[in-house]
Image (cartoon, rainbow, N blue to C red; front, side, top):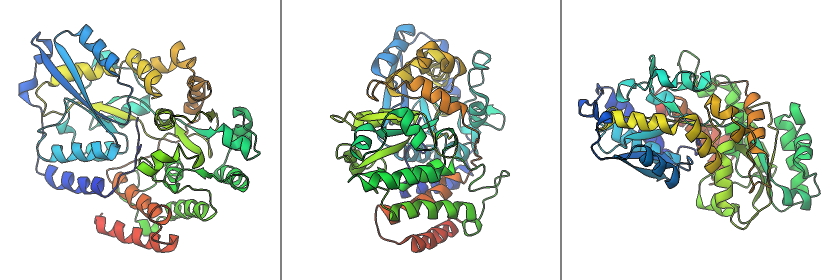
Length: 437
């Protein structure tokens, strides 16, 4: 889930990188022996789980765990934004781990950075979980041969759209028609932007919420956007591919396609109520936030299409910090929460498309419809979208910091409106240099 950057990192998140890098270079990490073996005890314990946005872990689901493990009470802390969760995690890791939850959720875009410190997390390898996930999800959760993260969801992307606003603008509005309007099986970003130009001619709404989301969809289709596959950074000044994406996105803003609403902000939340935009790039987990922000608005639907081929945005992991006092019990809980049965329930609760093969293939997921999305067959749609993912982009230890630098440049143009694109790109180059990579 979730939510790579389900939400985009801001300055505080970037600061977290520095804290982690400076502090952990001298930190050996390692398991806390206090936790070894307590998982077999019947002594009452409370396990804490830290997530963000909405993982689909309802009180009913967590109570089910207690029914099966009567000595264990589970308490969940949910950060409103992923960057809040990331800052909390990195700050406490850098301080030795005190105050961390027994189970900590990690978003995929943070994983490469944190994978540099595998000793800070428990090894979750277990014969019982072998073959549970798609292979690339396991690879993403593995560091130095150690499985440090159990996969929760993945983020195959479709296009969510306001069917009523399409109708008012005089555009085809049924899902199959919208898929064709956006280019069908061979949809391109140019097709998507061209449809947006037609839409804004007949509507007061913008075409999409914000350029950072479009950029996220684009950059997730690049095999190695910011770093070479050996981990060496690509100097931003020499990165013509990323600069081209930046210029493409900011050009659409100048054409009036963007609502300029930073994702996860109060203005973005309110935009759902104000008919501010008609489409969104829609990883499976995004269906939950769309519904929760759209009280009273019922025109949403989903088209089984995505520009530029398939794309995966986000997807998370559950980790067990080695500093915890209940590591064996925490490992058992993380294993249970990411089992196909529970991940299927999480998908039903929050739209988080499972990374578990058995869950993906289950009748429950395949036949699942989303009533809020006009009854869209979301199980079938996101299965199709997952099958179209052709690129598993390389994300090295500096991915998050460089990505944030470019995202900030887009936000200066679209949200703060403090810079023209050329000036903002120059500031991005300066910010990159300040990273000292």
